[in-house]
Image 1 (cartoon, rainbow, N blue to C red):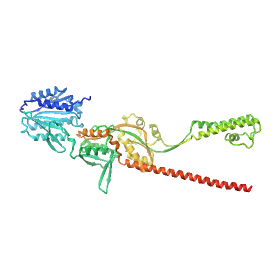
Image 2: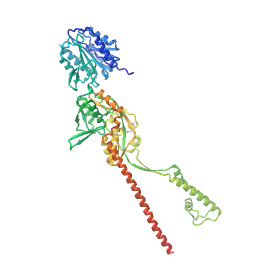
Image 3: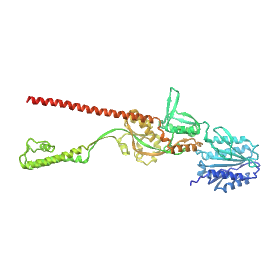
Image 4: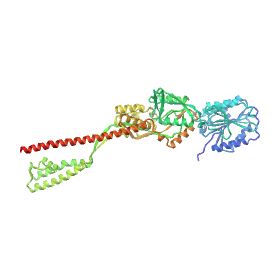
Length: 594
């Protein structure tokens, strides 16, 4: 069973006189409810051992938490005084999990002081872990009288928490009579709500109420395709990855505000620029997935779940190549023929047969089954002739049977291995980011071709490949298959192919701004879509059209081929018929002349 580690942040921020609650069982039930609902198994408490802190409240909180779970305690006051912050480098602090819970206990004194200290504490959490999703926070504020307390302090803390991307932060106010009043802020409805104790952390992402997310758009087929409809003055956005975002938008009810870039993805400066906008928070997420291993910007942005894979393949020109498939037996028979001629000629010379009848040319005629002008009369010549005829018949029949096995192989020049690609002498191009990760890949293609690869975007490489047929492209599989289909449709015939070899198997993920509160929910929905096989049903932009066009194109080629065969057959038959008529007339005229 997987053990979930939770973080309990315990900050005793007390100033002024405090009236202690007479019945403290509410905290036991609250912690028990949190442990039961979230399966809490470990706690790391951050406390402040100031002299003005109420020791009884602190010990009470300790005892309540420690008796329910194993607890590790870090003293913030001692860290500040000694300036030794090694305890803050714990992995669970630097990289809090989505199931983490930060519990902040406050004794409200001067409002300005405790508000500032609470916000400073939240800023410390962000400073310790700026990229990961913010954990849940429960602020328990002890106050003598709920009705007399200032709600402006609560709204200030809740507003500041959302500006720091804390989505699930609840303030629980407790007075001396243990009257509880939980407050939370819904940034999508922009309302400060009094929550039920049964739902300490309400599901705010169930309905985002049209909240706007900024999404950069760019023409990057097949992941994202932008089509401008000038007549209707509108822009159509399609693409395999954009469909994910579109479904998320409908599921969670948020709207999209598009940010169009002037430069295209083929520009080497495009991806550094777009990740800089994501890192600064100018955009909330990317509309296409990116290769995690091939990008150097993923340490400054939040990365979604790795739910799909991609690989690199080789796009090579389709160069026709024809060759005869000659068997070894046929070659042996061809080499044996002159040996037979020489052997029978030597036998004839040893037996002193007439040179006129047993010359080399005569022996060759006999082996080929041709008749002689004069039949030999001597018995020795007749026996040799009989053997020669039998050998010739056997040899010619076997040779003819092997000649019928000859195959004319029509294919294309192979570019399947690194050796074949290297020996071709063609220029090799790949996206610029491929070179940043290539030295980590031990595959044969990268090892042999790495120094020869030149940076060029796959679309530019394919344009050069189809035009000159003298280069090879290394591209991601999804882009390569799309470009292959697109070029085949454009030229009405295959002009390039995918190699059997693949390399640089990598994962795909969406990228989000630092501390994005949407990562966890988006990951769950995307994972359900992938497990249900929804992306497999997508054809992508133009794929259905390409399939239909290619099917019609193949039917047209078959019809043309049948018509060509019929034309050749009728033409040959007509020529044979004309030849028969001509030779028949000529033969009849000779007989009449005689």
